[in-house]
Image 1: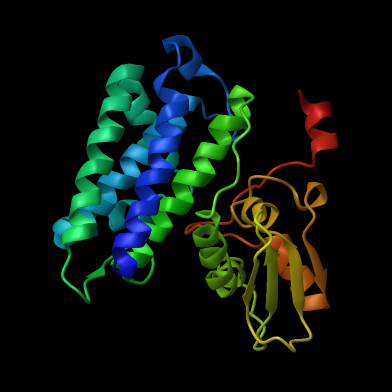
Image 2: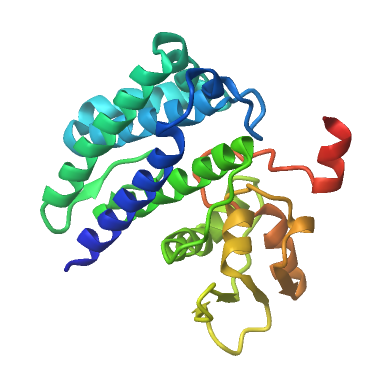
Length: 268
């Protein structure tokens, strides 16, 4: 099996797992608020549907995708929210669910059928097919976490989190750049412990700047789904410590992140 097929398979499994969670919801539960300010369960699925469709457009009609980039540049702080809201306004929950299912199935086929060496334009640099699938998996997992939190559901961590961690590590310099900070020249060592006990490591073994912790916690941190204070991710070295305060695995402006759990209680 090729690397592309393997990651697209994992993307499909991640999407299917989230589908099981939302597919049985009563229509009224789609209006439940999620931890993302102003976003309901419906907004989360709308965002995934929209992003899958935009990725499909980028892969099949790159010239038209350029129009989407122009929209993003014109309103970098609001275009994502506006796209999600437009779909929520236009679709009842069952129609929104159907649209997400259709879009992700069409994207699945396009990614699998893409010729070797294909580069897909995106809001940043063009991506390989495997990288696009990894990015979609990361987003699906992260927005699925918002939905799970809203519904009070607990999701068991899976081996698919390796993809989320990898993109979080690879996006290290982007997290600095998007904040106008010069990234460190030195490489960091990142050591993550998977639920099955496997050690997942990135960077030189002897690096002075080090990050360690559970794989799940690191993924929650780089997707900004939990505050660092509530996670067992630790840093050795000033630069590694700074990175953990700004890390983001997603493209776009710096996110507001989440309040520490103790402060969340005070804001309810």
